[in-house]
Length: 229
Image (spheres, rainbow, N blue to C red):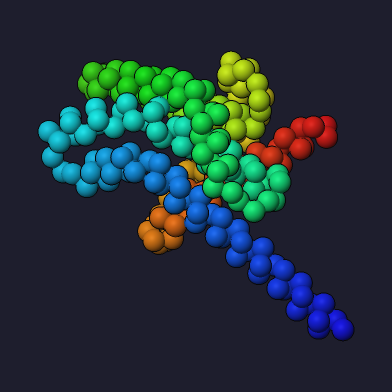
């Protein structure tokens, strides 16, 4: 009797795991399809060894970030939240409906990030001969802008509130819980790097959604801990 119980439990675990993996692959495929022009330009930039080519590729990539990349990332976050909170079978229409409903705010977040990064990149280039402190300051500023943008997208995925309220909550979270915010963001980046270096095929199938799913899980645990205090 106990053996049948253990076998049934093992079957349920394997079933749920296989269903989750299928959802991950499908979500990653939809995100990749949505961001195909962005990914092509990313690969071209990564593979080129000609500086002159970068002056063509980077200006082509820049406007696509707020138009495609950030709305797609927000839709992926929303889908990750749905898998975590509702534990439902993934419906591809959810991804596209999240993309559509959150497009305006994620586009504005992407525009803000892209504009600030372009400005900082220009200042960094012009200050190459300046004191190292200036470059360090710009690097720290870029890091914190990236964190605010990341948590701004998470808030956009999690709450149905005005954009300014979501950005304010993202900044409050970072200022009130800097240890958690910074470590979670670093964990997100490192998980990307680890999966990519382990197996590029695995990263292509699961990488982006797996990192977001794990990071969103930590975010939800933190929200629950804050609510219970």
